[in-house]
Length: 132
Image (cartoon, rainbow, N blue to C red; front, side, top):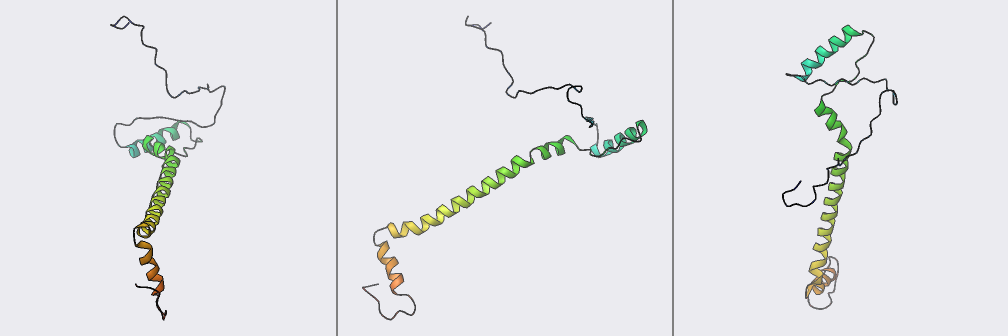
């Protein structure tokens, strides 16, 4: 209940909906074991491998990674997309600046005459038209 006497605030909803399947509905042959070590993650990984080897010698431990590595792997594609789009935007900005650099001098008063003088006094040209 609010102090002003108005209606109570609406309950909050999660922004990211998720769907949960039980193991019986979506069986998987993979096992995920999440461990929070107190010290070095590399040392903990060796201990976990030894314990798993003692429990079931036939069970392979193919891939072990820290949560930071897993998160980096998950964000790799959006990161590459952002880098590519940023580089394309920078190239577009560079091309537009080069275009402006070429257009602005010719649009100023007397700019076209100066540009034409450059063509008329080209090397190998014998006569020049007008004053340059």
